[in-house]
Length: 406
Image (cartoon, rainbow, N blue to C red; front, side, top):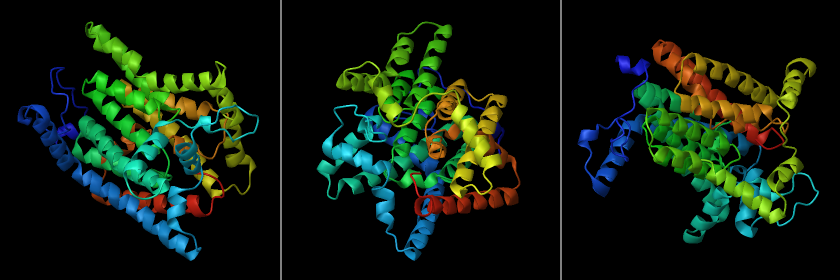
């Protein structure tokens, strides 16, 4: 491999065209809409190996789920499109949000951010099929857009093969099945990946716009907003430009808008946080996380397999973040994954979905992708095969055996 596969690539000059695709020289891009279309096509060709590998990994997981579900006399479509959180998003698309706080636990729809159900409602109005099918289709399409963005970031920093490996690792996460469910993780990861790519290529306003949309998608959108705002403000050290403060303000706008709207709807400034308390989600600095880690690892003699997987995912994520800092990853990636980890580990909420909450944190996988890039072909093949098969098994187990939400 050339040396560019093992060291970060410098960002292009600020005058570089805004619609460039990874791996496409600026001199070859035509101006205007035709140039943008050509750049997108070239970018897709560049990312084709990663997208094909992503499809292969996820189809392996889907096939495993289908066979297992058939043996248990379960349908696959309801598992993917209309269970657990998908029910809430479909309810919002059908009936809108709750108007009152209430006192019941785990029962207020205002805990769920609005962009995904709005997309489901809008697309379903223009296409045949149920809203559940529409929601699932949106997630699958967004998963490929996300995979493209993951590859773009990895390829930008360490070369095309590392980008492919990073994409495969993201696809083969133990909870990777969620990427093809009626959930928001694929949509959010698509925003996160392309916002981070925009930051790496000096496009602050594009990054801020995507961060604002991410802030309307999931509560952890604040992590992406932090990455964009910090990067924008630090760019002022190289000289003032109006784009920097504008990007810093725009990035958290989506998250703040929804939190503010919930407060107005409920007639109290802390309305959104009151809703979260009814969902048992309060900041405790990590006390609940430590308690559950101790319980799974030391106190429970026969913990649930799914809880073991969640625990291992959390511990490995912390180790990978330490390696990311050691490798001196670009600051936007470190801020995003650092704040994401802080939110997930510091929450006092339910324990079992936390591996899913970390699914958008794909930059954490960069140290593993780099190691695989330098490893022998035999080790790389064995590791990736084990990861893909393990992901397929964990996904089917999560959907068919584990009795609660992913």
